Amino acid sequence: MEPAKPTEISSRTLPFTDQWSPMLAIPAPVCRLENFLGAERADALLEYVISRRADFSAGTVLDPLSGQASHKGRDSLVLPVTSEVFSRHLADCLPLVQEVLGHRASLTRSLTVLTAHGEGGHYGVHTDATRVRDVSTAVSAVYYLHRRPRGFGGGQLRLFDTTVHDGTVRPADSYRTVEPEHDTIVFFPAGAFHEVIPSTCPSGQFADHRFTLTTWISGEAAATTPSDQPRIWQWLARAADHTRPVDGFAGDHDGATPAVLPPAHPATRLAVPGTVR
Ligand SMILES: O=C(O)CCC(=O)C(=O)O
Ligand SMILES: [Fe+2]
Image (cartoon, helix red, strand yellow):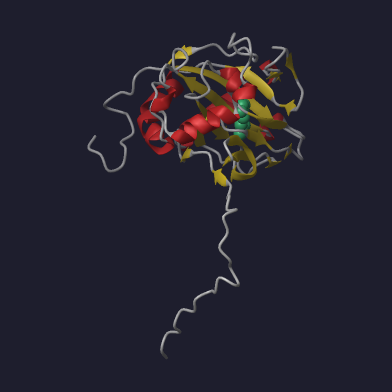
């Protein structure tokens, strides 16, 4: 049979107009790595997290205007930690992550907390601007851990798109969903709006919670040349502007302490596909 000839849709059906003003909706760049620590070490870390149960406390949010910490819109347990090995892995994958995220600034410091979400655990829509000096260049990294079979439901991470329309940049209602899969890590711009939707934990046991090792990675000080960053990063930073603490960054509201990220090690850094190591 002959293929049908295309039919022109007449401009009576689809008229021309000079009132044409579509809205740009851009997904936040995300880089996801599976099997990040490997089965054995991920299980060892999970056992460690469970063993620290008594040391977790309620996580806070910071009001950017008043500088006050509160529990508004958040029900998570947190425990600040540092780990040389985890930091080295982060440093070794940053060249690849930066390539995927279209990120150009230098990243030298990190803040890390363990988190646990149980029955009703959630973290309302926010940016991570309160965790870093310069949200236009900082990266958030969330490493997920949980028992198998999974003892919790829900708890997905939603990463909101950004709309750019008539010179205004704002977070969109649309989003991408990240499943909190054991031994996977996601990286995304710290200025992207995101939320953790409520989790359930039918057993009520701490060991069945949704666990993360959450890290905020940034440079030393405010970037002097943010225009080096691709446009999407600049838009994200503009949309996140009102979430920056007006008094600037004055230490972490959950007690995380800054650690220096080593440079990527030539022998262990992840290769960027398509380049010579
Ligand atoms: O747990 C997650 O998936 C995200 C956590 C988060 O957004 C945060 O701790 O700032
Ligand atoms: Fe966050």
